[in-house]
Length: 144
Image 1: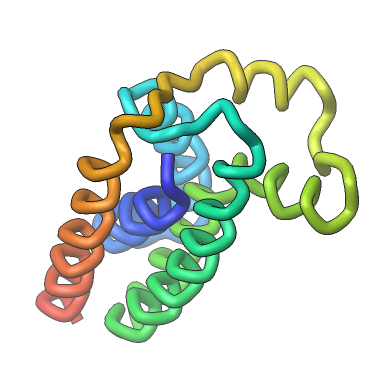
Image 2 (image 1 turned 180 degrees about the vertical axis):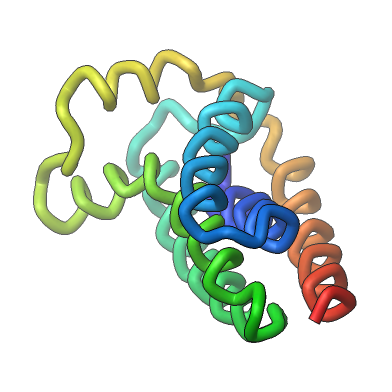
């Protein structure tokens, strides 16, 4: 699953839940649920990592945009929801930059097993991320 899609889900969770600790926990749970849904993935690491780096940068920009769009009273929960929704994928940049995952092996194994990936799903997931980003931003502005 593209990290941008997890960011969008986490922002919506934070906006609705409004309590940072709960938003964070529900965000982590949403990550597992979303990873179990059919989504893009690629078995060739060299292809995967090129897309992941671009998506990671886009995801960071989306996080900043959605945090800014959230009103002050919801901002902490929105940020917590986004961080929780992204946390399980911290293994990717950690492995890229430091050569290892920050999680115990069993956590990485569970995360790997729940994936429902196929390389031909990219167009659907990319469209979902873009549309979801705009929808989440509109929701956050409406609630602000």
